[in-house]
Image 1 (cartoon, rainbow, N blue to C red):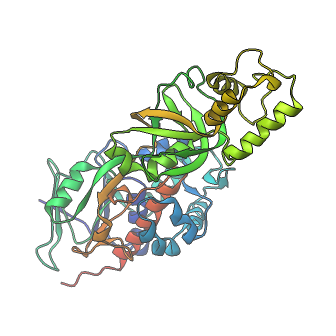
Image 2: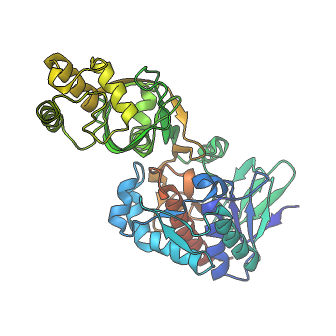
Length: 413
């Protein structure tokens, strides 16, 4: 026998929970079911931000917020005007979760624990009498035969039916294949938000050193950005690299993650400005040792490594700096060239670019254009953002709007 529900949400993550809660709160008499294939729900919420949960970003203007989305920028503008970062904060604060803004704009619960977010979501599910079934892996989806017939779902040993189906299973290739079978177009998934593998003597023994702002460019593409940069055991990471990986997800995949990266370690300072600074050192610090007298806001060990690479000898004074070495030093500082050979996943923040084509979705309701009683949100869709709480915000917004739309969809018999 098939279990029949008024709404079934497949996927127990941020978007799925938000959709189920919104629909159930608006239609308290409806039977709402969340199906999760894993042993735990909200697993990505739990590990986000190192267990603190970076739930959104302090960017409250929709037209500014969309600029952080390499894919989905145009499509999210309207939805963000309906449910934006401030609405997310308001939603959680009404459920007892105080939030705070950090210096870089990321927003966290004051508790610094993702459990606060999970508790708020699970309490809301409980209050709305939503049923959650874990370890239920949907293996088949059958669309309705007509306007009155239901969606049919099948797992290994259970069957379900519903007039309103929501899919929020994240980056799930198997689910994408099922959707392709019923006619939805997919965009092939590729990784986003990854760090760069670089084996280079200039970076050896310097893991943990960072610069507050570097300019980054990949000359084989039009990709360039800036942001904090972190030296790691395997190469380069930090928000600047992650931003570059997000905007370049498809191009860098096409290059098999082998390309040249140019780094301006001095950030917004141009080569000409750096040259002027060095000339001032030659004049004002003539008798000072170059390796010990660092005129730039770089960590001492990084300055020494770059200067030595350029040919600055131990004990060399600023007054003794040869023109050829000065030229190489400027290149190391402002146009350092590093060969990237591969990528690494950024901790637990793995994000995929790809999924259901955005042309398939009506963004007024997050429903599928060819199946008006099918809703999709979160990383199911070809939407992704840079790091900083933006991917969660897209999930909250999509889930909230989909839940609203589901609650308004009346099936005439």
